Length: 118
Image 1 (cartoon, rainbow, N blue to C red):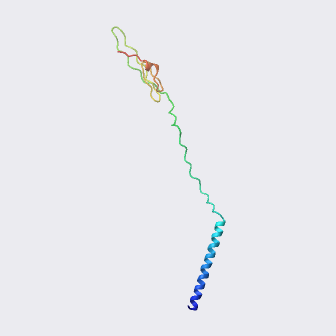
Image 2: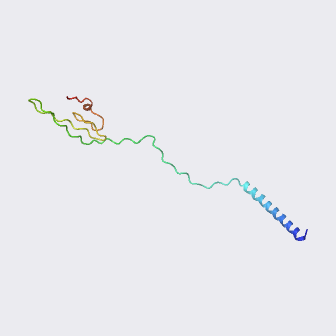
Image 3: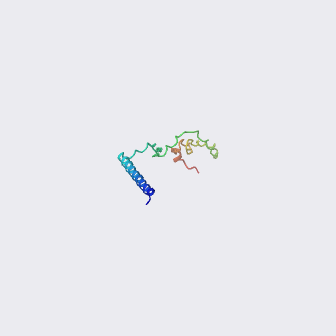
């Protein structure tokens, strides 16, 4: 073995030993500090709450009733009958009847008991 080869082998051994010692020092100091805290991250966006019940129905707004019905035909020797009552208005539309309907969608007494003319 020549003199230059022996110098290179000794230098390489010292270099590797130095690297190993530095690695040990770095490992011990990094584990001695404990885990690093995570940087503050913004919280996830909050979703709007889901409604538990459906929205309330639209308010009942009465509107004008429908026009009156036509008069009845004249009997023998008598005059014609009077006109029918107006139809119910509102939201939703009310029912009509012989004496007029309700204005908020529910049938009135006149609608339920309307006579059956023949």
